[in-house]
Image (cartoon, rainbow, N blue to C red):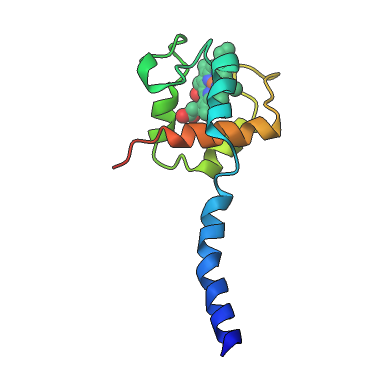
Length: 108
Ligand code: HEC
């Protein structure tokens, strides 16, 4: 009997773990990093409006682009910018940035 209860407890816990795995980063640190390293081109927060560099999409639009899942954002950030081949973001900052950008998604 006890074994059964433990087992069902584990099954309930599993999906929550999976959800958490997507949010490894700290979005406040992500915003700080973005302000320092991305804001010269991108509009990084919802109140800033258009990006400074017209080719650079603002982060709210990035977050709301269909298919821009946390994984897709993380993968994008591990790829050098097309026009900035030397721009490489450290892995720990990628998690924070991904958490931050994902948090900008407007709920439907
Ligand atoms: C020197 C200017 C510049 C800086 C600095 C910069 N970007 Fe970009 N970024 C661009 C441009 C221009 C594009 C559009 C490139 C393209 O689509 O070919 C872009 C595209 C992107 C995209 C893809 C958007 C999409 O919808 O495809 C993401 C995500 C992104 N940048 C994130 C970042 C992050 C995070 C930082 C800071 C760590 C950053 N960028 C810093 C200029 C910049």
